[in-house]
Image 1 (tube, rainbow, N blue to C red):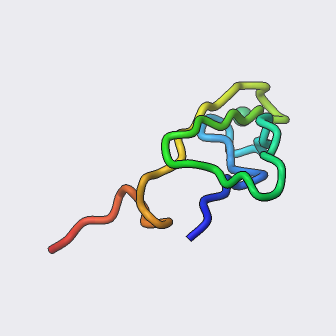
Image 2: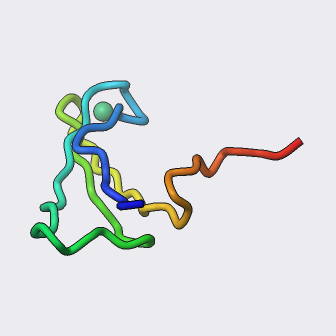
Length: 65
Ligand SMILES: [Zn+2]
């Protein structure tokens, strides 16, 4: 499964819209787990760096019970 960062996320601080700063890779060069992508919030101008997960889209907050 290809790993691709969201182009827009919800700002963790203010709930505004944060847009992807990191340029997407050319076609044929997939993102890799561990790649860091940066977002900039349009409202509070905070920057967020996110690390692409290792799993195939599985949320890291998932738990087994
Ligand atoms: Zn914000």
